[in-house]
Image 1 (tube, rainbow, N blue to C red):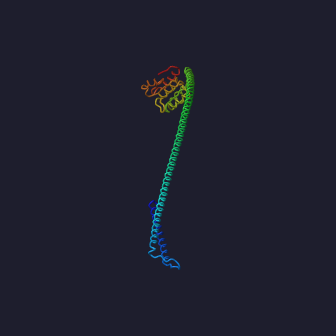
Image 2 (cartoon, rainbow, N blue to C red):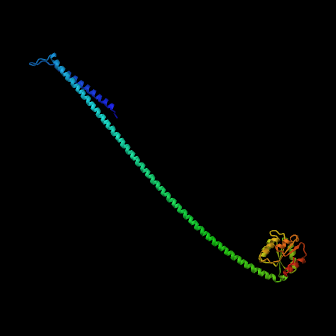
Length: 329
């Protein structure tokens, strides 16, 4: 874009070219006039030519007019160039002012647009934040409601399970009470039957004698002795076998060894005495340490203790006394 200085230089160049053109035109006009004046012949009857002295004032007058004209033309050209330069400068100033105003307007509009965009962005962010907060609040409320509902259901389920457990326990207690009552009634009936059977004096053929010993030789020897006196004989290989048979069918007399695998004589005695159905059964314990174990045997509930070896007639006599109701030691 041209500046004020360049416009002034252009105007000056135009003015100088105009002056040179006027100078060339004037010189050609003067040469033409002089050529026509020098080459003319005096026509018949015409006035005589003017002499050089007579034409001098005219030439000076023309020259002065030409100088004045040229000066006027120069001044006019300078004025025109000045006005043109001022016009161009004014136009440039107006253009620059218009550009400045346009730039300011564009900047203002851009600022307004950016401000509007910023406001819209902030509004969007505010709305988004409010929406996020609302959704978070709704989620929190839903989670809290779900938690409360889960706690309520858990409490209800716990109460239901507790009630079911209470009913189950009560039912179990009731069943256990009924079972214990039935067992107690059965024990009492069996005890009464056992006592009634014990009070009845049985003959050897009606008397069942159980021999519990882990020695097969002792079982056979004792069994032959009892069979010889008409007693019914039942054999048990150890304390466990004896307890199992007694649980199924009670003997009238129990003869047991002390040391047996699985269950010894004392443990078997405690079990027999602990069951009301078999508590009345007389027990004869055979041991090689009769004196040392006497107190323990008596405390356990043994009726007779026989030391090994013992006379066969002594065993039969103890059985007879126990069955007749006369306990012996």
